[in-house]
Image (cartoon, rainbow, N blue to C red; front, side, top):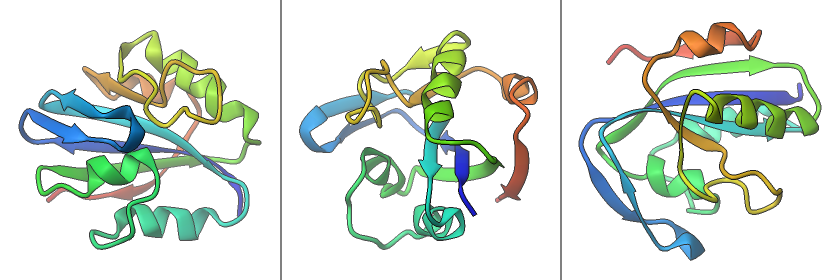
Length: 134
């Protein structure tokens, strides 16, 4: 299965993390949405994101490799890779982008956006495929 996905991430306290070549980034406590795509195996990609122990490879790995950050929801929809950037651009209108995060292979401002509320996802026609209430 292939498509694009949204990771809804809760950051439980203000953090300052080194994120690869981006350097140190401040993450304020709150809710973030990460926009990604998997054009080969969506299930494997999502399973990898949910692992706490993994090789740090993508920008999102740096944020998720922290005890104060956790995935609380995952949304998915069938779409080609070009839609990943379109969704990121829409979400930026409703939140605060973390500059250059997750967007080193495109011209987007960011693929990680701090948001105030999840209602925006309702407008994007994604299907909820994971929920963690812990």
